[in-house]
Image (cartoon, rainbow, N blue to C red; front, side, top):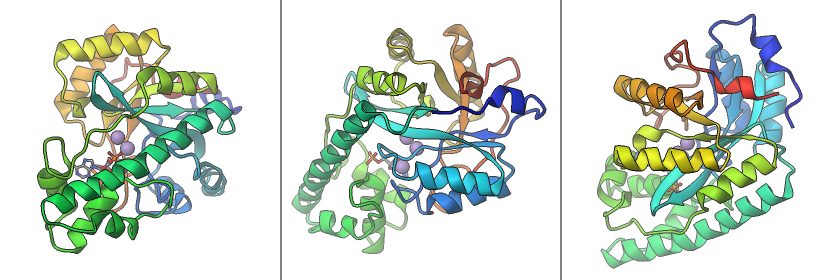
Length: 291
Ligand code: AMP
Ligand code: MN
Ligand code: MN
Ligand code: MN
């Protein structure tokens, strides 16, 4: 549980450089949690959250490293869900990492990833690329967390594409031969687990979802009804137009605004830690909800 009164401490820093979305080797990032903390500090981040996919295993080390580097730290996670069959990510912040319901829910999500990865391997074998599941495992840095990013790195290593975005474009995105449908958690699960553990739920990178405006509004209605409180407005994958658009939605849905690079490593990242535009000044930053 976060006990430090951020609002009081940060009232002297304006604007606060907070980065509440990034990954380490505990999921599909390329650096250990300690190195991510050091890079965040070197980049001028005041307040940082590590948000590995579906796993809390890096938080303890990240918290110690953040303290050593002199920056504030908030527990984080990026939970994989589907809503109306659309894969969506929900960031959780400031929760109790020892909460048993959250822990059990994430355990189940990680187990589901293994079964999905085997089906991805079979789908790629069917188009003549054998043993990709086994190959991807060589790129996995946490045995219980296998992601499409690990598949992409393996496929680059055997020369199937020049780089990771190229693999996603031709093999791992919806409609491409290595993409398989998967049952993730529900929106109610993710928001419920985060809230139940005393945390704040945030919609990750909303500009990345292939959703009509009407569906986005329905999604935000459901998210609010379930107790969701935040939305990423400034993030690594948002264009200036996305920032304006999701700032408007944050205002009209009375959501707090989050900011996150989605840093995965020196390559493969849209933005570096803390190197993002500030939030529009009238929005309420999500760190104000954390204690
Ligand atoms: P998964 O959670 O297994 O579906 O994998 C999603 C991860 O794959 C994301 O968090 C990114 O790390 C990576 N990813 C997804 N789409 C792309 C893309 N177009 N280019 C590069 N990496 C991507
Ligand atoms: Mn990732
Ligand atoms: Mn994501
Ligand atoms: Mn992410």
